[in-house]
Amino acid sequence: MCLAIPAQVVELRDGDNALVDLAGVRKEISLSLVDEVAVGDYVIVHVGYALNKLDPEEAAKTLALFAEIGQLGGESTPDR
Image 1: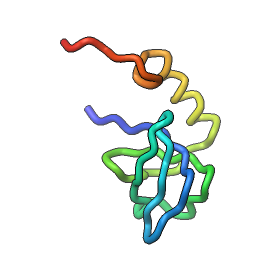
Image 2 (image 1 turned 135 degrees about the vertical axis):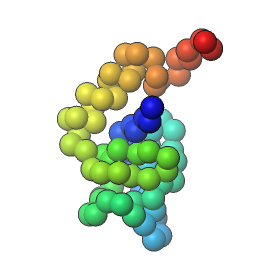
Image 3 (image 1 turned 90 degrees about the vertical axis):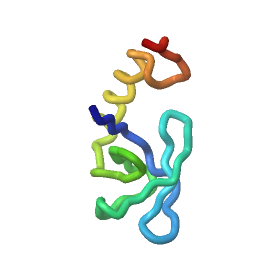
Image 4 (image 1 turned 180 degrees about the vertical axis):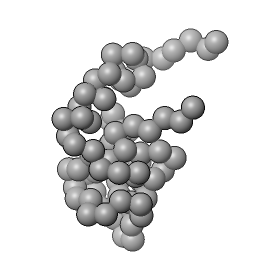
């Protein structure tokens, strides 16, 4: 199973790179697969690449669901 999560672009960098905020964690990613991304946009990120842009409302809903199930926001899940 693959997991791609919404992240907000906080800085555009050289080339096709950007700095994004993933629930408080900042990470540099590649924007090479997505056109016309600006600071403030939300993108879906998987293994260091933005796959597409996401509507801010949809990003908020998805992030709220992740927080609700404990995947974001510092909660840990027990090993199985």
